[in-house]
Amino acid sequence: MEHFSPQQAADYLQAHPSALLIDCRSEIEFLFVGHPTGAIHVAWNDGPDWAVNPRFVPDVKKIVGNGDRPILLICRSGSRSVTAGEALEAEGFKNIINVLHGFEGDLDAEHQRSTVNGWRHDGLPWSQC
Image 1: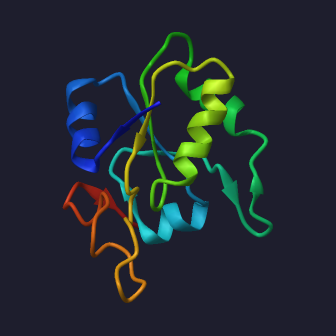
Image 2: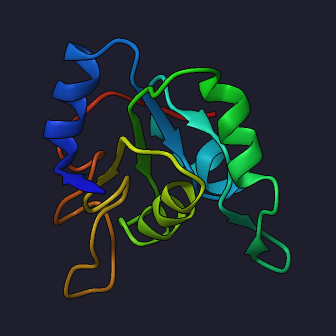
């Protein structure tokens, strides 16, 4: 698995139109916190019990279709996306890229996100419901 900064991921997506950006956060995070513009939502885990989604790999396979399209994974801070990427690699996916710092980034000294790094902090395109 490769690891790209948010800006590197955005540049890669621009240069590789067949690449997919999958946001693996919960549905609530995706909808109400916001998400990268154009991201496809497939939750790695979700409430209320936060169990791993047993449909994650099959759902990604369905989206990817035939071929070895690059898949970029993003979550809140870059942790769940690593675990989700490892699950995809275990199922034979070859071109997985983790977006470092995720959508909201690392916590700052006041335990807030989006102030240090991450997709939103870096001013990259995003949408919100």
